[in-house]
Amino acid sequence: MKTWKRTLAVMMGAAMALGGLVGCGGKTEESANAGVPTLTWYLAQENQSDKQTVVDEVNKILEKNVGARLDLQFIDAGSYNDKMTMMLASGKEVDLCFTADWTNKYIQNAQKGAFLQLDDMLETEAPKLKESIPDYLYDAVKVDGKLYAIPNIQVLFNQLGLIVFKDYADKYQFDFSTVKKVQDIEPYLKILKDKEPGLIPYCVEWTASMFSSPVYEEVIPQTGVVIRKDSTDYKAEILVETPEYKEGVKTLGDWYQKGYIREDVNSVLENETDLKAGKYGVYQARIKPGAESEIKLKYGKDSIIIPIEEPYLIANAGITTMTAIGRTSKYPTQALQIIQEVNTNKELYNMLCFGLEGKHYTWVDEDHIRLTPDSGYQPNVAWMFGNQFNAFCMEGQDADVWEQTKKMNDEAKVSPLAGFILDTEPIKTELSQIATVSKEYKAVSNGSDASEATYNEMLKKLYDAGQEKVLQEVQRQIDEWVKNKK
Image 1 (spheres, rainbow, N blue to C red):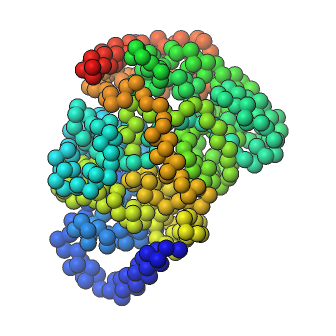
Image 2: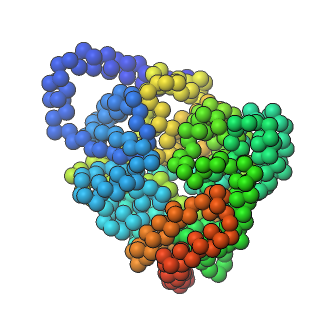
Image 3: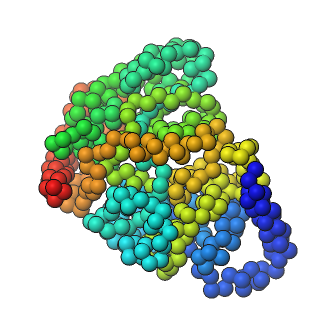
């Protein structure tokens, strides 16, 4: 094991022992912290029972290097977007927060002025952070030419795949090399349905859009507007009218009738609980190097990963995981310097990701750690904290997993809309109405009501909600962007 790892463990043990000697005094700690600001960082994550132990050690580093302390606030992913929306709208002080295109929406919050503009501060207050992230990634996440959050370096490409749990795969010796698209998994689903009573063969996570994903990318989530990944004419289309999406609706409807999809799929709010309980045979996920070990950590089972599309860099690849500074923060300089420290200090970053050596994880060899079960700190969201290429390798991952990931980032096909950011302000009313219709008719996309009559009813309501206007506005902005790019 590397010398610095052993040294760090000894130093931390001594620090905790000393902390125990002065802890009951209280006033000593208070006086030591006098004048040191505490900044709050909100993340979309389940709370961890031993979080404070980790935060206390993190703060020893931050006090020394930044002159600030951190209050780490985990909000469960299901509630995170709504709670952050309320906090930012109310003017509540927010120092740091996780933001993305799928929760605590980056573009919308940047356009509303909820996040602090960072361009000038980055140059003067966090030069190491600026140098640690490539310029193309900063450019890809700018809104109206300005930077409002720091992108986390991680898997930048998108690649969806089917995840098959290996216990059943080994039992039935199915040849998964024949599976090239989602539909090809059906013979295996039939085996599970016929021979594994009580098991749900197929978990519907990505719905019918899984079938269109190999061909189309959505301009931004929730617009319902897509462009072909191989487009040269930049023509936008409506997702639910594409042949691939319609085929997905038809296929899922057929699978629902055959019992491959759970009967109550329309009322299921999340699948994680049942995945952890081993109730599904196949599910869908975004795949990447090292995914097998993450799946085993999460669900306790070995898996087989089947890609159903090529690696692809979406238009705004960098905005899938970012850290923003709230406009209301009283300590923006320290906030940015905390982001810098997390992204450039490997010791600090890995402490946030994995906790404390000997308590929350152990080293199994020179390159791999093993997480300690029931340790009280296991966020499993290294990609949410900062630069994931600084993360320790977990047991089961290839030692060169980050080199593999960098290579795939570099070699992935690039979106024809790379760098394009949609201004949703002119269509915000229509987008809200479209979201309402989509929620009302989710039975169409998950297969539980795939009749032509219901599909046509949904389509009419989408048009009534303003889908055509959204399409036209998206096309207008794309055309303007293409013209200015030449």
